[in-house]
Amino acid sequence: MARPYADPVEIITEPIPAQSPFIPVEAKIVVGAVAPASPDPIPIVLLPGFEYRLREWRHPSTHEIHWRLERRRAAQYDEGGD
Image (cartoon, rainbow, N blue to C red; front, side):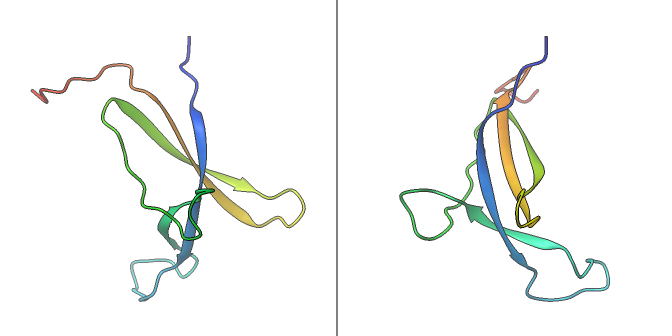
């Protein structure tokens, strides 16, 4: 049975400040995550023992693209790293 992703968080992105021939013009940089307790985006902390994925989400009325970070417990996790 697949383990569901849970605790989705909206990710705030901005245009990349410096352009490069290797980075597409429409690319974005991650600034942080939305948090009700903070007026500014907060840093994202990735916890060991979890798998993460970013998922594109389009607002139904504005059709603006947003990003969501989702996490789930990793199938196998070894703290030793060997």
